Every structure is written in C-alpha cells, then in structure tokens.
Image (cartoon, rainbow, N blue to C red; front, side, top):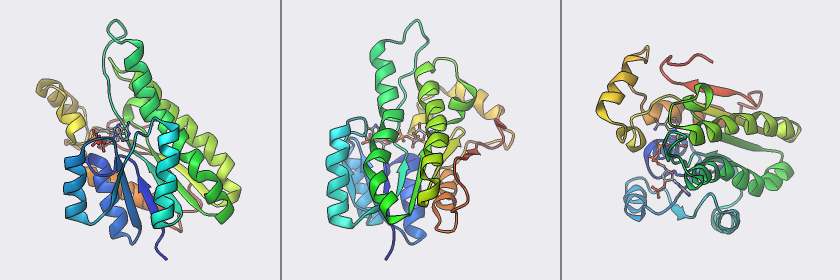
Length: 240
Ligand SMILES: NC(=O)c1ccc[n+]([C@@H]2O[C@H](COP(=O)([O-])OP(=O)(O)OC[C@H]3O[C@@H](n4cnc5c(N)ncnc54)[C@H](OP(=O)(O)O)[C@@H]3O)[C@@H](O)[C@H]2O)c1
C-alpha cells in the first residue's frame, strides 16, 4: 500500500511542488491549504491530488482535519509541515499581532500536526516528518524577527523531536530553503530581489522543485538513518 503524505500549504508554491514530487515517488498525497479555494481547485484538477482546508495554527482545526484525512485516506505516515506566512516589519513597526500570527502559523503548526500524528506513527513504528524552515531562521534577516524566530524554532523543534522518534522508526528532519521563486518572494521589491540574487553563488533563485527533491529524499523508506538534520537548499548563499 502506498504511504500517505499530508503536505500543509501543499497546493501552491513550494508545497505544490512537494505534493507533486511525492505523488511521482509513488506516495498518496493530501494537500492542505488555508483559504485560497481557487488555487486548491485548480491544483486538484491539474494533479488529481485532493485538498483539505483548515488553519494549521488552530489545534482543534488540525485535530478535526487529521481525523478526516485518516478516515478517508488511511494513516498519515509522512507529514510535511510546509505552510507558512510572513508579516514583515522592523521592531519599531511590528506589533504583537504580527508576531503571534507568524509564530502560530509557522511554528505552532509544526507542534499541532506532529502531535496529532505522533501516536499513530509510534505505534506503527514508521514515520517521516519534514519541517520547512528557512535560511532566514539560520542567518536572521532585517525586518523579520517574527519569521526568523519561528524558523529558527523549527530547527530546534526538529532536533529535539528527532531524539524522541529515533527508537520508534520516526525520522524528523528540516529543510532550510534559500530564496525560492514563489509568490512569497515575488512580493519582495524588485531592487531588493536583485540584490538578493547577486548574493547567491549559483546566480539564481531556487525553484520549488529544488526543495521538493529534498523532501522526497528525506521521506524515502530507506532514509531511516537520517534524522535531526537540517538540509540547506540555498544555492550556496549560507553555508551552515
Ligand atoms: N519562497 C521562499 O523563498 C521561501 C524561502 C524559505 C522558506 N520558505 C518557506 O517555505 C514554505 C512555503 O513557502 P511558499 O513560498 O511556497 O509560500 P506561499 O506560496 O505563500 O504558500 C503558502 C502556503 O501555506 C498555506 N498557508 C498559509 N497560512 C496557512 C494557515 N494558517 N493554515 C493553513 N495553510 C496555510 C497557504 O494556503 P492558501 O493558498 O490557502 O493561502 C499556501 O498553500 C513556507 O513555510 C515558507 O516560510 C519559503
């Protein structure tokens, strides 16, 4: 039986590439999203991958969604915590709401979903969890104390949870993408973007597929000796 992967934020941007790459690798995939119904419908029509709408920052919504996915498709054996947002601003401009939204969506979601699939993975003695961090969680970024803290938190969360899963066949890894050509990055002003590209040794932005390839590698059945690691996929921009 094909293993089932849940990819959060899996119908758009990097997540869509992850969902498609996992499907190509023979996994069953369900992609979650927050509210962009049009993107979800177009994605399902194009790929055949079903989607489910819920807020990853809301524990009870996650509980209901995991129960629904497992009832309809079987146990979640691969979890990719990819959903994320930015609410940028310098400390002077950042308010508590911007802080909470980014911490709850980017980091709280990793707890919510890992917690909800953990007992099942433990009892089946198999699980693959990949959390999508960021180069900005490794290196910090001006105007992103919320995002850098959340992503840096993901890297710590990954290393701690990996230790708990190791004896139960559950691997927990992170990927720290550099700048990838998605809507999130296209929102950056053009002059700033050109300066960013000039600092990337390979001379281009990443493609979503570059990240998806890493997720496939880390979630393979025979990747069982790789746990607690952070894979940097950033064109050489930050060597950590
Ligand atoms: N793009 C980059 O250069 C880059 C670099 C480093 C790390 N990352 C990380 O990679 C991940 C994907 O980034 P991306 O650029 O592909 O982002 P994106 O294009 O903005 O897509 C974000 C996805 O997350 C979903 N989402 C947002 N908030 C959610 C919530 N509260 N509940 C459920 N789903 C939610 C969105 O759903 P809707 O479509 O319904 O809104 C969408 O599917 C993020 O974690 C991001 O921080 C990106």
